[in-house]
Image 1 (cartoon, rainbow, N blue to C red):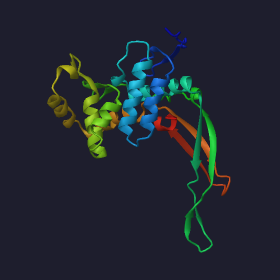
Image 2: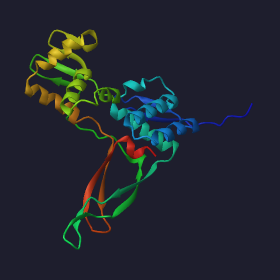
Image 3: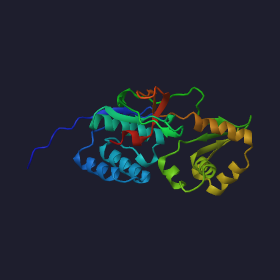
Image 4: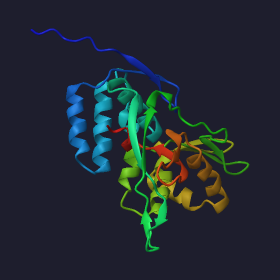
Length: 243
């Protein structure tokens, strides 16, 4: 029997729970999955491959399918950093529009290459963020974080319908002064009826929950070496690290 290589073990804390998770770097068998997924433009397939690789590499008991979107992104980013290297080479093209010799608009052809250290990226934290939302003096709601599975389930809907259905799926419990009403003990129809009965002011309070959720992103200042155009670029999303 051939000898087996020792595999290092790393740790990272989940953002939503502050729980420490142990994981190993991905191996050749996982790299093959990435290569197949990288040949496809299907974002759903990409996310499914990432979840499968995380299931393979995480050494603790955890339900990958129910991870929040930002926990999944943060775990994958750390896994990629420990498996391939923490430095990602990125290239951005200039978005500036110039005039040619005939006075017609043309895109600048300048570009900038830069390195991004994945281990330096930390999730954003907003002091206004809270999973528990007081809707009225006597009534409130507690929300769970959306998962990629939730979002993918409604991807063919328009933006408003997606948000409404994700909100319904994110209800953890509703409470008043006397009792807590868990969504798992209620029917979906009952949850929909509750959401439909909310006022616009209530939805605005709930919107803060989604707007202030942690994000995995990095702001980079871009200056074109060709036309001197400048802008701030927000780098986020697993596609930037799927290399």
